[in-house]
Image 1 (cartoon, rainbow, N blue to C red):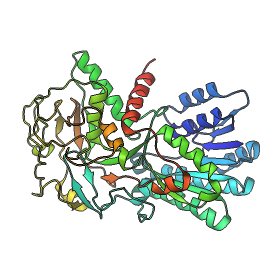
Image 2 (cartoon, rainbow, N blue to C red):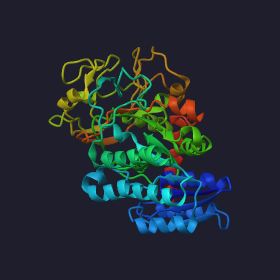
Image 3 (cartoon, rainbow, N blue to C red):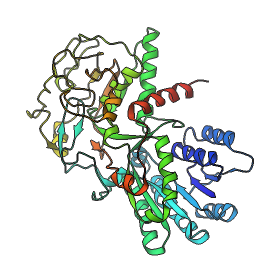
Length: 453
């Protein structure tokens, strides 16, 4: 079957394109090659394709004429995966017009070209969890390593109200609704996937997009600096580091888009929240600990974790400072609450964010019961997937010796988003197969291979 993948040379698109190429399908990728790494991904796809199996059209989806020309020349298509988009919140803030043209006008052009040239096609749209806004009205709780929302133990399902925040949320949300409405009003078979965090091979992560890949790169770089006896260059994070996302590996993403086509009649007009689910959720601090295990960063079992709340920009810890706090019981926060008491995000904002530099020593705990790398006490039950993510040393939480600077929390950021994926499990027969620990290990390997000349 002929398949059109817009943004087909990006991270998501190249993974999905490679999957359908491996199945022997004819694939057309529409990509303007704006993004870093897209030309390398195109070369990779060309190396996989048989003669005549792959066509690349260098087209900006915001230009209606060239888009229609692709449909006239290469169509009709049985399946269209609309993945092209401006995907960085920071870019949407600095250039909102370009963001709108790419995400809103580009999506509209694809819908109209499909309606005119291949009305029987099936269209899958890559939307985002940002259509739900910053989720500031929920009651939050805080552990040593993460924020949680106790009222949503499985994450958020598709009934969550829309609240477009930031230019990125507005543009993706508008396109999200166009795809839904073209099913209702014109009968186009569309499905919308509101993605959480996705990572994996072919992702050329940058500072503002692809956070797991980016921090894998930074951890690899800091390990190399230490090995060479050089000063460690700190990276930056925004906020406390306790922000949580469920993470989905690219292999599971490709399986999702394949399953969607197989169930196209049943899921036409539907919306799905998509991510790794609660079993594959990570905060930044938990990711840093996992990187410490996977990269075999040195540890000192007798040291204790520094308490981030104990430092302020007026009194930052010095490099190698022995200052530490026993967090067998989470310490009180800056507003006098225990860190397990719920608060709304508006209350969290009132606490502010320190701009101090944190250099967590490699740490573990001998006191009982210490918190584990997922923020639970070690007497609390957890699933097998959560145990796998923590690894063999899950009885002790440690921060790796990573150096980072804290910046203020990003405007319109979500402190917690986990997709409740039970609808996708039920209607698509789909469930993530790559756990967060295995996925991060694969991401490290990809970063290392991509860095080689």
